[in-house]
Amino acid sequence: MKASANKLDFGCGQVKEADYVGMDIFPGDFVDVVHSFDEFPYPFESNFFDEVKAFSSLEHVADLIATVCEIHRILKPGGLLKVACPHYSGPDAYRDPTHKTFFAYTTFDRFTGDTSYTTAESGMFRVRRRMFGVPVGGRKGFAALPKAFGNRFPNFYERYLCWMMPAKVIYYELEAIKPAEGPP
Image 1: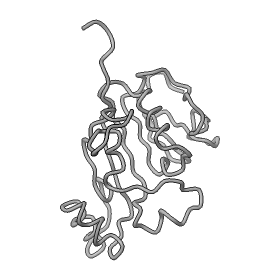
Image 2: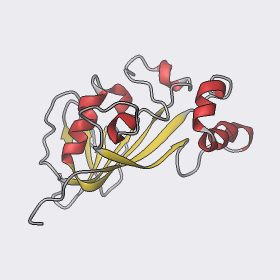
Image 3: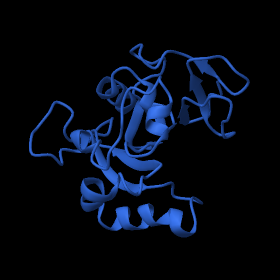
């Protein structure tokens, strides 16, 4: 693991950007840390990372709430959690038998406090961005309609249209809310 790296690729698999520490459950050429996603704590100090990228990985964890809480622990105050995972309406959500959680537009509201109830996790994150599709690239033409319409009217889209025009991926950027360390 590079000591200067302050970005974690959570579930990097066989692809990792050069400036990330790669963590996965299986060893590989791009994996710096082999560790179960479901074994807590992760082998990192608290407030260690500026960013955690979890692309196609959170849908595989046994306990999403505990995993997100643990990622929050290792993020610095203001650190970003970037998540890309299958939306529940897309076929990829169900094709892989190792998927344990299905994601909606509001899945992470439990961690932001933007729900009608308060949980122990409320207020851990602030949503900086969420969208159907990925921020760069993506589908063109007719296939882009669910993304465009869903991002404009997410509640209407999920309630009435997502089964007719499924979204393949949903993307979130969440900012860790926690007190800064050190003297005031």
